[in-house]
Image (cartoon, rainbow, N blue to C red; front, side, top):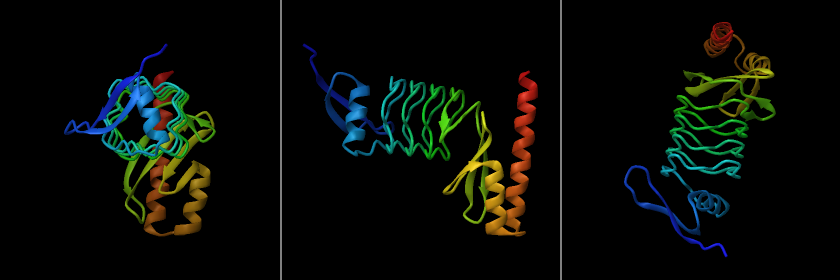
Length: 196
């Protein structure tokens, strides 16, 4: 018979308890919290094994997930903004619609991460503030070409450029976005060349 115990999830900055569950490990506690629609903002989940966990729509803003195993996890629609993901394993994780603005991805394994059908092939570029909302633009290398996430837009770089032309015409915002796309394409080409 599997025994359960109280497992707590604490705040990474002040060590206060964010959530307590009858769970045998941190993985089960996190899943229970997410299923209960609990916010895990600022949670200390450093090194946690969350492989394959359903974390769809989870609020993990500012959480410490450094070194965590998030491989094959469903993070679609999750709020990971300003989260610490340094060294995290995000291989084959579903990041479709996830908010990772300002997240620290240094050393994170993003191989085959799912960006809404496209598979990430490396670390994205973050450019910003840019545009009429001073937002951050993410440009991801994927198996289907460059993928852009900014504001509520998520899609291929060609679709993004069409949307920019439609919305911004020839304004300074359009020029900035076009320049950012050209810069991103050049950086990704250089990364690919350096890797081969």
